[in-house]
Length: 412
View 1 (cartoon, rainbow, N blue to C red):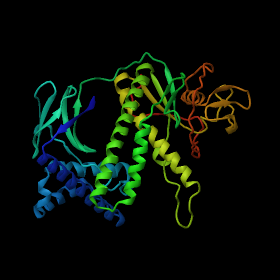
View 2 (view 1 turned 135 degrees about the vertical axis):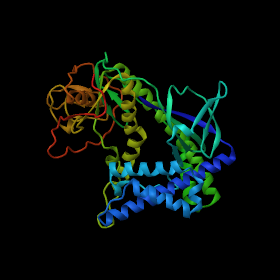
View 3 (view 1 turned 60 degrees about the vertical axis):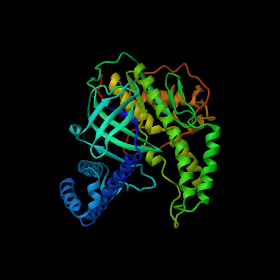
View 4 (view 1 turned 180 degrees about the vertical axis):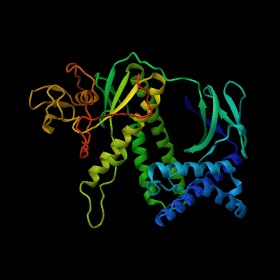
């Protein structure tokens, strides 16, 4: 199957400048192509990859700065844009803003890429127009690479190889099914009573980050002090995102290696974290409270955990199932009585009908597992801390206990 291998590059100053230039050119091609597609859609027409690629070739003859970047990298940008527009819609694809988008570009032709190992710690890769670039050899490629992507994260550049490792998804898994409830106080709670959580930023980092954010608000846009402050913020956030990615990978590995079926709530994280600011005519209510909830949801990395589980399931044969999230935290697992008053506190769930007492997260995880059609014992609840989660409203015409199998995952 296809997998990724990411390594940290050790570029020369000239190579760093070239990578920055290539990224800016690719960003300009993306934004120009997106604007052209939107203009065509406003007229009722449609623009796709083939005519845009032809126009790109003509533009390269007229504009010398376009010829600085490798041609197949620019063509790959148009392919990615075409795929994004077809998947999400032309007017929902985002612009690549320089202040918010990290430079990246892809080399799709493996014949133009060559990888060599220099010694135990270092390797090198030859890329078009960049030449030989040294990278830290932290793991073997493990197969034939299909493409290479160069990207910047913080102050460092990385190269990612898309590798065919030759591993097949197992047909059977000997584990048991499990339901997983994602929350704010605890990132992931399993129906077995296990809690998966960790802090991604230390107390000192949070205080330092708050101080730097205040400093940014007092600096002038485009000034050197502002660039230095933003770079310091990025260094802290890079450490936080790396810890979050490591936590998601570890949690996914534990769940997929032990369980044959992982049941998750079908949460629309982007919609759930939308701003409540509203408009001038109709200002929103509880904007500050909603902003705090959005930060808490994004900090726990709900979507990243789901992606990590789906990726790890390819190697274990685990089935990933999504179910309707409505009322999973308000339903008693024992008697199926639904009442919001059953949640006495952040961690305690006491059914108002039968008196069943359990940890609120574990009770919700068991309801999630039951929604997928799997039996689960009603005993063995634990209680340490629970999560505060906003209950989404069930769509019209959708049953309350609807199980949706995830496409692309093999069923054991």
